[in-house]
Length: 320
Image (cartoon, rainbow, N blue to C red; front, side, top):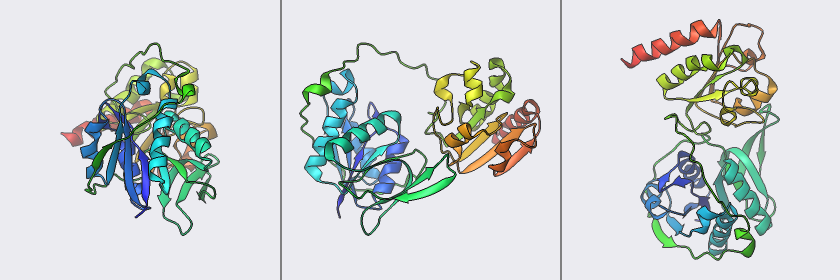
């Protein structure tokens, strides 16, 4: 079968879930070949092989950590030239979309971002996207060059499919422009112990109805009981109640979890754009006419400060 190049998102050898989802999608259109870069790249081979990678290309160089994304694009381009794949799949993170866009420019190829599904077609891979704040679903394919496609997290199941996973070292030559902007310092983000917002299977979000930063403890308690990530609406973020990094919406992060719980969120189009592709949506709001109820699978009309603690208690009871 033709080869599909998959860019690996990992942290010191620990492969992140969106990459494993990409391998599931890649197997629909060809044989996945994974590209892992930087420290711990070789350690990813076992997990990648368990999930369908027939080959794992690795490259280690200080440029991958000392500079911005351009050296990673150099490596992805080198892999592209070595393989001539039928498609290139990249996780749809902020960095992933920049890498994909730069590769598309270098190769003169079409680019599809934020796909939520992928299937084989007679004339190339067909990607499904949610458009216009998820009011419409589109099916598209690239008509020029090699398809470069970024896929949103939680768009496909993680399905083990053991493959050879032979590891090869990829030679990479860095361009002069790739080292033009150097990273001079890093500040590690403080861990909350919760899942990454865009990758979480469950997200619990709070909005204007939370009515204060101190009240987000109620939202956090429910999230922690479910092993979920915490999100916030733009209104809550603009009010300074929760960090911008947790904002869900058109100007924040786009999420697509298995379960999304919106508490005290009216459901403005800006917020809906970031969560409307969630598989199951639950809303808690005092206003029975809130727009969010037009979207949900389950709605609870009530005071979140009454309902959410009861949900949290019930979750704890069921977990024993």
